Structure formats: C-alpha cells, structure tokens
Amino acid sequence: MAYSGAVLQRARERLEQAREIARNEANERLEKAYADCPRLREVDLALQRTMAQTVAAALASGSDPREAIERIKKENQNLQAERSWLLQTLELEDDDFDPQSVCELCGGTGYVGSAMCECLRELCRQEQKRELSSLLDGRESFDGFRLELYPESPDPKLGVSCRRVMKSVRDRCFDYARAFRTDSPNLLFSGGTGLGKTFLSACIARTVAEGGFSVVYDTAGKLFSDFEAAKFQTSEQTQARTTKYLDCDLLIIDDLGTEMTTQFTQSALYQVVNTRLMAARPVIISTNLSPTELEDRYSPQIVSRLLGSYELLTFCGNDIRLLRK
Image (cartoon, rainbow, N blue to C red; front, top):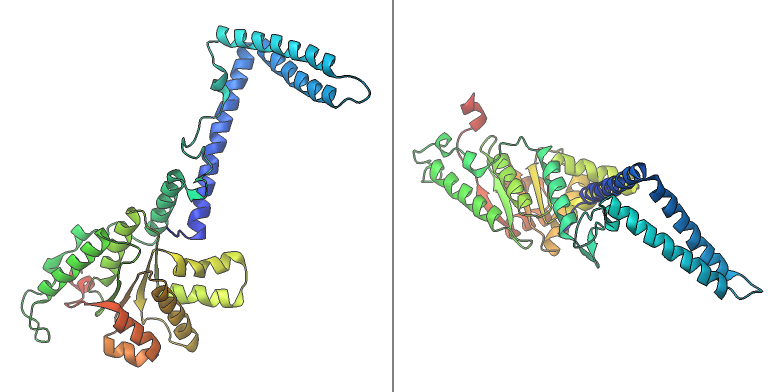
C-alpha cells in the first residue's frame, strides 16, 4: 500500500523511537546491576580488554602469538565464569541486558527482507488516520448520515423523493467503503451545496483508512496549490506533496469547481485524473457542478474521463446546513 512519504517517515521515526527507548531501558538495567555489584562493571571492562588484547596478539608480527592468545583465552574464560556467578547472585540472566525486541518478526527494522513488516504497516495506518483526523471533525460515520433531513415528497425533476435517492447514495457509499480494494471504481459526487457530499466523502475516507489503505483527502484548492508550489520549487519535500496525490490507494478531491479555473489548474487536474486512471487507482471527486456545468468549465479530455470513467452519484435535497440552523 502506497503511503505518502510524510506518513512513512513519521512511522519510521516512531519505530526508531521505540528502539531507542528499548536500548535506554536495557542500559538502565545494566547500570542498576553495576550499582548493586561494582565488581560486575570491573569484570565487564576486563573482558573488553582481553578481547582487544586477543586481536592485538593475533596481529603481532615477528613472534608466535599462539602462546599469548592461549593465555588471554584462559583469562577470558575465568572472567566469564566469574561474571556468570555474579549474575546468579543478582538473580539476573545475561540477556536481561539486551534491548527488548520492538517486533519479533523484523527486530524493529520495519522490514522482513524487502517487504514492509506489519509493525511498520500498523504505525503507517495510525499516522494515516492521524493525518486524516486533522482534516476531518471526528463525527463522520455512516450511522450519522440523517436521511430525515431530505424531503420525503416526490421531487418534480426526479420523479422520486430525495430521501429515497439519498438512501441509495448512502448505501452505495457504505458498500464502497466496506468493500474497498485498490482497483475499486471511481466515484463522482454531483449536487448543490450542503447536500452531504463532503460528509459522505469523509465517511469513506475514514472507513478505508481504518481498513489499512493509504488515503489522501483534500480540497481541489489545496491540490492545485501543491502542484503550483511544485512547479516553482524543486525541493524533495515540495515534490512529495504532489506525489502523494498520484500514488495513494484512494484519492478524494473535495469541492472541485470552487477553484479559479486556469490553464494550469486544467493541466494539473488532467495529470491527476489521467495518471490515476492509467494506473487503475481509484479517485472520488465531489463537485457542486452538474455534468453540463463540468462540460462548460473543463476541457473535453477531462470531462470525457470524469463522465466516462466515473460512477456518477447525484445528490439532491435542500441545504442541510441551513436546515440545521
């Protein structure tokens, strides 16, 4: 799963912090043992010296080092025996001073061979959810979608009630989020202001992220701002801000059509839509524009992809924000 560079970096930092804590705790246990038994420190220092002496003796030139090595080896064995006895008196084992493993599978490296270990993957999931939480208000859940706010009487244009339409939309979004895969279809939310597009987008984002997939959720304005910054800045951090839109498992673009449409925004939108379409990576786009208004605003290449390769979900009803007031 393609987590953004920022999410992966924070997860790696947390894993390294856990390893550092384990190393510090191991050192604290050793220092306590030294405080309880000063002779143990002396023995450990002597063992370090005998190892250095063995290496020096083996490298000595002009004489046979075997006698020196044998003498040092015997001294080392005596020290090891004394150390073992000292640990017994302290009711300790030698591995009590080893850092506790952060992960039994990878040893805290975050990888098993070239594959990401589950420990690092879980930290990525947590950082992903934390990043989303900074954008969402924490109340987004499908259970909180209030159908009673939509008119029950038949809509003249649709021939059915908006409540019935929106129940179908909500159920489709719920099924999409629960069954999400990296090759799930693209969705296009279309409808007026305050009809629940952002809310249901956020519900999908939270559910998919909790399923362990990488999700990038942002407004169209923020997306275009990041691409514009990347155009004029070449830093690795700036480039990563645009790469995340192309590589994540699910991209959700909110409020398309609220930006000022320029040649640059058209080009950036086409790059995102086309790149992800070619890679079969799903996108959800919400907009206040109708299909006809999309045709009037964006290039034929963009509109062809949006209306031809996205499943259209039409939102209807009255502005919920006003109704709640």
